[in-house]
Length: 169
Image (cartoon, rainbow, N blue to C red):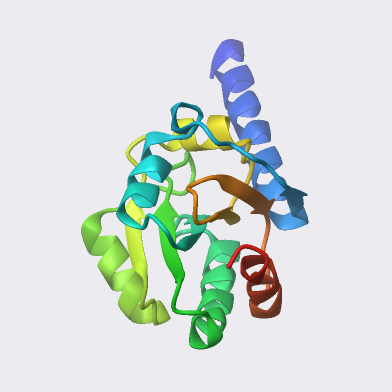
């Protein structure tokens, strides 16, 4: 292989590794984005369909092992979640993970007991850049007013999900 190709492969591989490690280590960021123009269009779409409710968005990919663990915690959370909390999974396509399709999401939902809505991000890099998410899984919480008030990169257990959403219900 040419030296340039190897360098490009190395850069992409290191970027992907940093992205994955970010998701495993976990970081928390409280944010307050009041202007929908600052939010990714995929998130604005979810907010628009759930106005007046607290929304928990799980940013994931079906081929991501930590994301599957987060889904298991979301299943536990759903059992005791308040009725005014809407839960979504937003699937992002990333190099190395492959592209999710409607069929792969349906299969994933069946195999993993997903009872909430899963949608495919139409603009995954917009989600990353505008919310400052550098790894998956990631959790986004939107308050009743439609403001993104919390983001976390990494796995959160069901108890933590309950505690976080209760701050905004």
